[in-house]
Length: 241
Image (cartoon, rainbow, N blue to C red):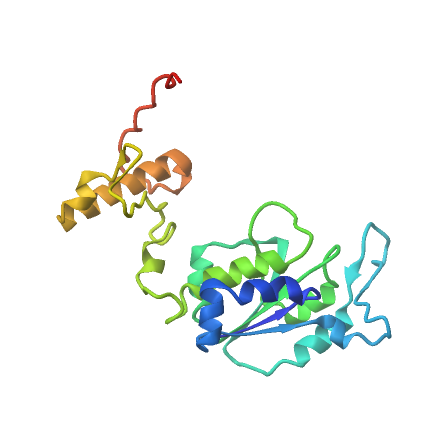
């Protein structure tokens, strides 16, 4: 998969793209990520890409010209989707990540200031996405969130292909608790069922724990016919020291 990102702050993106899962996928050519700076397509000596909005109002807008020229510098791809990261967009979720992973190329537009000229949005943007009901100083962090979530569904990016299918939200529920070595730490033991070797019991326990966590944290995600377990009892009192 190819991902082109339009951003006037490429340094914010490049550091993250060199590390972890995404960095490895890029080095192994499973992902090709290209960051384009619209300032390189400004037609003034100061490389400015913003100006005051017509009609007045606070702040500045990104101009249509540099963005259009930056877009036109990219290779064409029929199987492509252009996404604008904005608080005004549709709430991004796991279904979007899975769907977008099916495209050969994504273009992510990072806004700055008070946004971008509407003419660019009308001409080039296929979808507008938001990562939550709050406002950030720019679209770089949302772009990385979308890229990271989508990349998990691109074949070969994860070391274990089943990981994406067992994460929170993959089946509509939150993932339950997980444990690793040691079996006991400061009096806290790994649940015996996970050490039993009985895969049927383990899966049943994990499903119950998933329902329990979803019931406690995100009850809105529970299916209508779900029979969630009882809440775990609250701890009584505090330890005396």
